[in-house]
Length: 192
Image 1 (cartoon, helix red, strand yellow):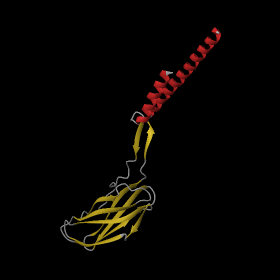
Image 2 (cartoon, rainbow, N blue to C red; image 1 turned 180 degrees about the vertical axis):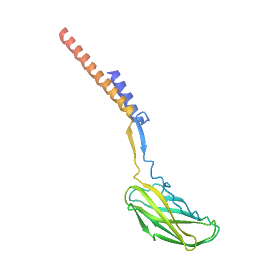
Image 3 (cartoon, rainbow, N blue to C red; image 1 turned 90 degrees about the vertical axis):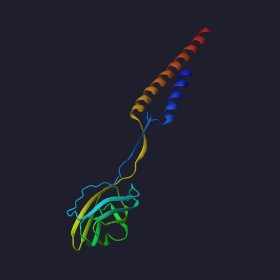
Image 4 (spheres, rainbow, N blue to C red; image 1 turned 120 degrees about the horizontal axis):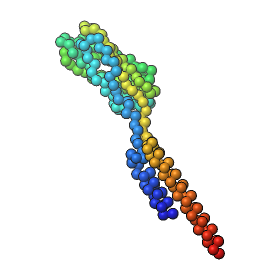
């Protein structure tokens, strides 16, 4: 009986510690904004990094989506307009799809942002089109992954094997204990 209690105590301690032997932690590391295809026929207006706040939007969340726009030419970009095209998973919460930035002198940067809502999960291809009155047009495509954060504890497969072995051992000990007890009671009955 002492062995059974000792084995059960050790098993319980392993279960309660939550060590990597027993549980492993899985997190959806997605939702990282990524550059997908950057098609920039014109290297004159460069659309730099995409910024997402909060960093990992989930379906149903509202977030700010921003881009850095830079005039990479040696002349002023006149009458610069930037237009965002959103896939079906995303919708514009406020403002206009088109932003008028006016004139951009050489090497000048501006930050443009939109308030967006993620309706469903999936890979979202976002297109930015720009147009100037003197330098032409261009487009840039970006990928934003919208997925629910999935965090959970799962039984480690090695622990599952360990738990089965311990369970078999505990059942075997219980059976042995019951047999020995019944043998003792039978012997004491026979002696009387």
